[in-house]
Length: 178
Image 1: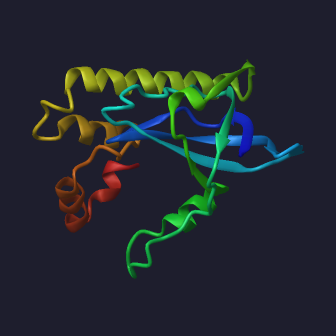
Image 2 (image 1 turned 180 degrees about the vertical axis):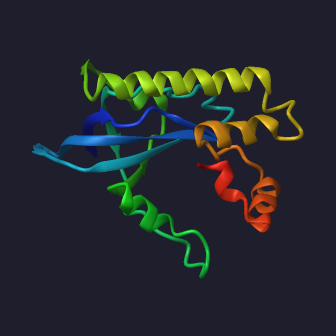
């Protein structure tokens, strides 16, 4: 089993069914060899009845975790649809992986990254939480909270397909994710 070590280059981004964050690699351990490494890996974590607790990884947190199947981002071969592979490449993310269990994440001592960026991620997290408090997702049938998250903070993870479609068809989708 391989183990990757690095630091959270982004704070956890919550989305329906789970969350993801980007890990800036510093080393990879495989068998008996530990090798220096560079690059970003997008790690996904899915919540369920068995795993209800979120990871809530903060920007700058030093981490180590086991991985089994890192793979390159890929598209689903649907012509004319969103090119997630190119989007990840523009963000310098060249591998994706899955965190199977929250307890697999080993928090290491120390912090990395910028103090300013850390403060911005904390502020953004508080604003998203406030919108959830004002417009609880399970009670917001009109999707007002999701639209506000997209327009004010660029988080389009909670938009319903119907809302996305309506904005795309009217030519105003860019207003949601400025």
